[in-house]
Structures are given as structure tokens and as C-alpha cells.
Amino acid sequence: MAFTRATGKHRRSGRMHRTSARAAGVATLAATGVMGTFAAGPAHAAGTTAEQTGLIPVVGIGDSVAEQIGAQAAAQRQAAEEKAAEEAARKAAARRAATERAAEVRAAREAERRRLNAYVVPIAHSYVSTGYRTGGSLWSSGTHTGIDFHAAAGTAVHAVGSGTVVSAGWGGAYGYEVVIRMADGMYTQYGHLSSVGVSVGERVTPGRQLGLSGSTGNTTGPHLHFEARTTAEYGSDVDPVAYLRKHGVNV
Image (cartoon, rainbow, N blue to C red; front, side):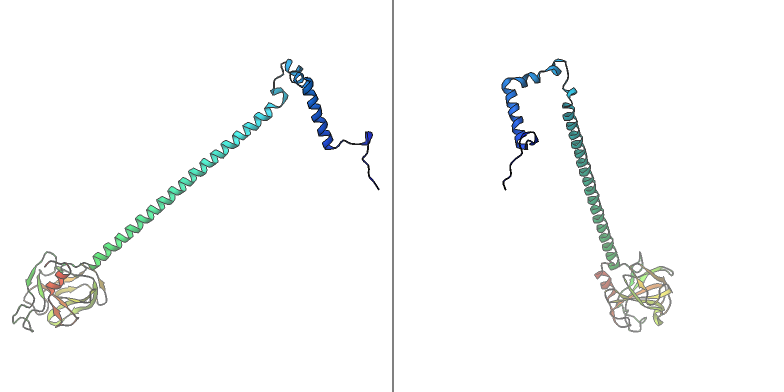
């Protein structure tokens, strides 16, 4: 069966047909000059403005909205850039603060390390009154096993360095004494004290007061007897002046 297109008044123009017809009509108007007459027709002659036609306002509103959107976008970009700059500045400041804190911590640790490794004299503003290995009948071994620091009774006696107290109390001929195992493995002894202010097992740091000088034990008068030893026991003594000077103490 063959299908035929409807004709006459019951036939609706197709889209292509209508478009072609409009194009043909426009061409005819342009050829006859009617379009030009229409453009300058009564509305224009009567002084009707372009705004009254409703065309330009639509274009104007569109431009205004676009400008507003553009301005908003620019403002948002600027705000985002400012926020990013502030965040970057905040992070940079935080990094600087962290770096400064780390430097302060390192400096404090280094200062503490130096302090703990430092050595000081056992009696401030004193001098050696009797030297190491001085001979005489005053000592049972025939020689002096340490050095004596001049000190009046009751003068503060200090640890020469960091260490742990291994003896604190009566020491026979040494009277009241303190013996410390030093951080470097050596031992120091402080004898003839009038009082003891530390106890066995206590950790001490350079300059820590151990007690007060006196004349207890085998002595002819108040002073501090100081020894440097390789062990905690009598008879392992070494030159205390050389030991202190090795650690930067000028005696």
C-alpha cells in the first residue's frame, strides 16, 4: 500500500516549508523596500524610543547581570587570594615559631649539657695550702694522698662535678667525709667536714653543696682535704690538681 501526503486545508505545513516561506517573504520585502519603510514606520515617526519596544532593556539587564556576576567573581577571587595569603602567612609564622622553639630547646639542652659536664673548685675563693704527695709524719702512708684547701670552719664545700654519692658519713682519720663517683668514672673525696648535707645514692651536679668544712678526724685545724681516686677506696689516689686542671679548673 502506498501512503500519500494530505493536501489542501487539512495539510499542515512542514517545518522546512514554513522556514522557506518566511525566508522567501523576507527576501521579497527587502527587494521591494517595504522592510526599510517598516523600520522607519509610525512607531519611529511618533517618537517611540527604543526602550519602549522592550528590546534594549532586555539587553541592558543582561549586561548588568553579567557585570554583577563578574564583579562578584572578582571579589570572590580576591577574598580567596587574601585568605590563601593569610593562611600562608600563618603557616610561615607557625614554622618560624616552631623553628625558634626548637632552637631554644637545643640551646637549653646544650647549656644544661655544658653545665653538667663542667667542673668547679670545691671551695670558692680558696687556695691549696698543702700539696699532693707532701711528706711528713702527719700521714700514716708517709705522704699526703690529696691536697688541702684553706677554709675556715663552716665554709661551704661543693661537688667539683656531676656524679653519685657513694659514701657519706664518718670516715675514720678523714673525719666526716663524702665520696662521689664522678660522671667520668673517677672518684672524688671531701674530708674533715663538720657536717654532711647529702646521702648515699644521691645524684649531685657541679657546685652542689655537700656539707661544711671543719677539723674532724686526724687534723691539726679546719680545712678541706680533697682527693681524686680511681676507686672509692683509700690508696687509689691520683694527682688531684692534674685531675681538676684536666677538666678546666685552675688551681
